[in-house]
Length: 267
Image 1: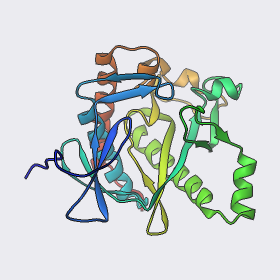
Image 2: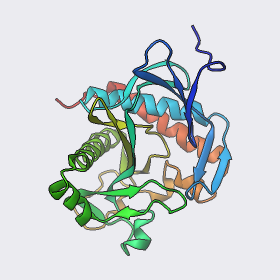
Image 3: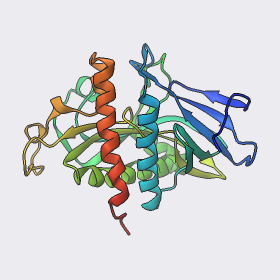
Image 4: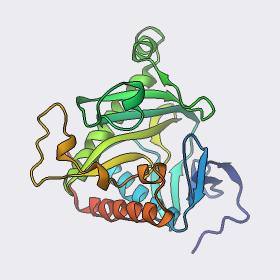
């Protein structure tokens, strides 16, 4: 039976999703995807018809894969199109956690790095989630201090889970000759434990196809090995791409993640 949310209790609404109560189970909620897309800390905002369906597909495929990999996530099931059933949070941790393999995006400006620089191991950074303040980054030394001196193991757990998720998805996308460049994830507490939450879709990461048959990643800068211009992510929108082009890129991602079901999860 199709779910009707017209008369359901709306708990929260963000830029790209609406959260509804589940009257049949108070420990879960419904996450309904929207066609909205934003960039520039919410300054740029459009509605792209069909985006909600594509984001929902990508989110479903990735979370089901991560659950098979043993990652602790909030994702439970997909009752119908554009809807995910997820565990209800005790509270959301107001941070964005970013893991990077390749230097791209904002780090090129504030970090004064060259595009294509490869990080090995990956680096993970914490950003305070606040659009008016432009999501300021927390200093790594301070994060280490919180973990060691303030007895805040949540930061280490988020750091570890973020890197773990990145490596799982990097390997998964590599099967389809795509490099996961970086990704941004969010976390919350459920029954006293830190869980990966929110969505993972085209706006969550950068994806660059391989540019050569056998890329050589054993070098300091790997830009020549990748097709940055053929990106399959929200940078297309950030850079002014038309709505149909943005949707096409996201559809390509969904076609790839649909095949994650064929991948064997690591033991």
